[in-house]
Image (cartoon, rainbow, N blue to C red; front, side, top):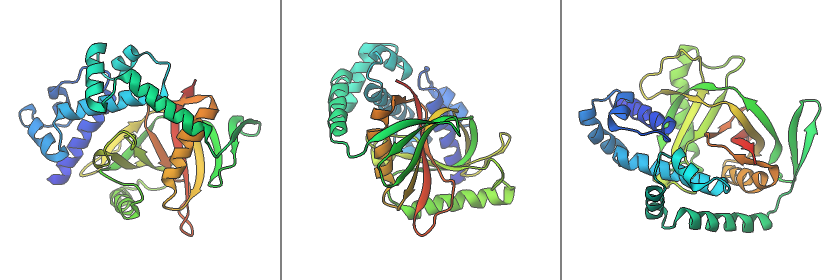
Length: 302
């Protein structure tokens, strides 16, 4: 029964993520999670540690902070609307209460820090057009980075097992989550195939979200009509343009690779991150303690 409750809470998370710009009612979220609206608030709080209202408010403000920093030319009224606030005054008041600064002061402080880090950057990137693949690529002097290019991804349907809490450097945790997902998928004939992909989706920015509330989903692509059950959920990952940066990494180098994409590649690329989830894809099995991984960040032109 606990696994079924976890699955339904994940449905609530997925519904909220898709509707942050809309007016979200408790009844709608409860219905999406297949719970009675009379008991949903208490169940959600018991399992998540926040009420649905607290959770929605936090996710909206963390999403707003992402836009404030990475989309510096976007008006605050537009950011507020994207995050479910029709009143700029209410948005600004809630933002300051949560982060301790107004959106404008928060933007200025973060951008100043990014620019300072960029001036001290250790890595250079150089764009070039690859005629063979008809795509834009970048050369870099970062040892772990093997390539970086812009790719167009289709929408993907994935089955997932989700974790909430710290995950950085915890190889045992990832092993457990993958084993749980593969044990479910194997008997259903869902492993392998021409277009099969395995990926890890990071729903939150670890620079913004308390590590106890970070959400991670390990995923495999599945046919659209796949039925999820137990602790396994199903969701769609939006298609569109992504930078795909390939690395060969030791287990403790993943954070450095992500930092390179956001701190070095993006400021020099002519692109900015888009409002879709970022993820890792694993084109090969680990060898000799090294992981080949594609870090995929949604982007749009500056």
